[in-house]
Image 1: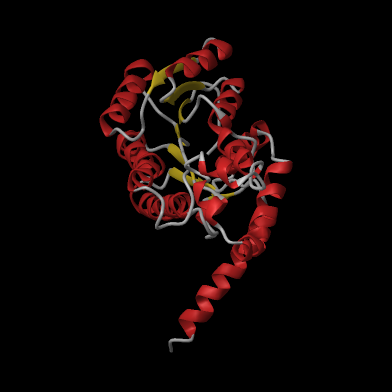
Image 2: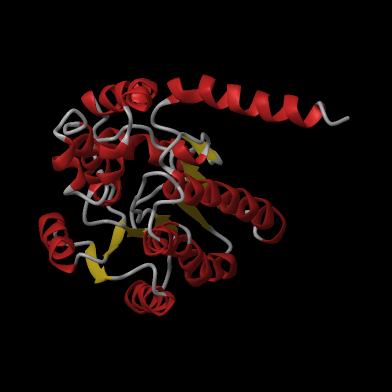
Length: 289
């Protein structure tokens, strides 16, 4: 889909990170941008920085009623929606069986339900208009399955599957409405900086680790388990050392939209890891013949 001046875009998770960068890049192209985020004050700051052509609608994407209100506000103001970026996301990690149920549910409600709510609220308008493009933000974690990241990885796998299904449905029912699922690698976002913050205290005194809920489990590792975890720690350190800028990530996302690509990533170097995973799955399935 060609991105053009005068179009209307809705971006969730727009107060920070990739969402804010995408909104800024669209605004620079004279696209009317509706920014949505649960952080109302930061959202208003972004809109004030952008100026004319940007509107803030504070929204909790986990609440379907609020996303419906976001759609109503968009249609009332502009009478159309051309681009939807379901970008809001959060994370939680640790051993799967130790992650609090509330944390599992919180991650799912934002990362998956938030996308579902966006699709249900906005895609009918696109289908009626016979045009549009939906962009769902997943993650490289939606194509791989690393340890100690199950809530986030499971939610992002769901976003990939949802996007694929939506793409196939629209190909039949509304061929001029496209879908792209974005699978970012290490981008300089608040979420990644949080991972880096945890990584920075991995060698701390066990008591310091116990004082933080997200790192308490690390304090209980035996020396042998810590040795086994060293490759994970090293990967985290490498991942957070030199992240891509959000502005560059936004350029990649918008280029994928204009190329009408179903999948895109900021870090194609992860492709061999994904290939290995897929080959393992196929090999195991064929072994059942």
